[in-house]
Length: 401
Ligand SMILES: *Cc1c(COP(=O)(O)O)cnc(C)c1O
Image (cartoon, rainbow, N blue to C red; front, side):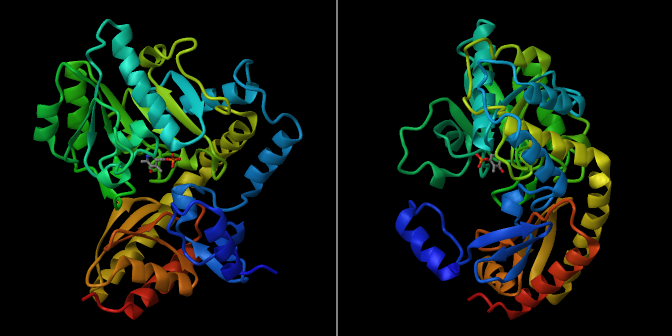
């Protein structure tokens, strides 16, 4: 039997060293739990980075994948793909603003398509000069060259220059700065409703509504990146359902396939029509396997998962807020099953390590945030157990110098 350390050694020899990997090789999962190559069991509160909305190996998803695998794997978009059409219809049915869907394989590709469409939309309408993208500092939109350029974290661009021209950044949540940045050269404003990768930072109250007004008045496309916040993660199918605003374009990925790689761009009928014949594409985009699984995920979300997730998320949040009394958690932010704990006086990396040793997988962001993204199917008992383990890890972590 090959254990964790042997896998680590082989990985470090065979793979490009771009990931900072923890000394655990995961070999099996079921629901909220995963097991490593040494046989140790964990509660998985990272969930493949906010991907596994229905946990590991959900029976309905396994069934959908197996059935599709016996029927048709891949044919390309040279032909109509019934599963893809059905998935588009199912997504549009739960996304009233949207009239068109484009499928790809990841969040970065969904954003890439969104940004390309934003430029094409204005170019088609006789305004090729309207090509600038305004995005937010500290945002994350993926790792293609256009999306690292749009992302507001310079570390992801370093060494990869020259970057894509025509992107400007404004501080997240700063309306005056946004107002000043949006002009007659702006094609689109791209924003995460909650900044996930930079530490689960929700947009300030009223910011997205005001951004909608500013962009509408100036003929600028409003683009929501719901790659992390979508597919029920915050207790509604899309985060923006909590608000009274809708975007013109929205990117979706992470939870869409519940762990099967698939992404999508959803667009208003008017904007979506500008991704004309031959203008964009993806060999694997909307492949039958991914679409069959995503259809099953959407069916489950409609079947009561969202309602139950809101109840358990409220319990989880209350328990996490209880940890503030011990002094090492300053506050809890986020929504639903996407939560960030802001730490005080302890290093997030130490807390992550201590939690892992106690059988709980969480994610350290920077020095002082722990991100939790458990499945929407989390049980009350497992929520309590996770908080117990996290609490022990917090108390045991060494005080930060
Ligand atoms: C994860 C993420 C992406 C990138 O998705 P990939 O599938 O890794 O390309 C883009 N935007 C947001 C908000 C994300 O959280």
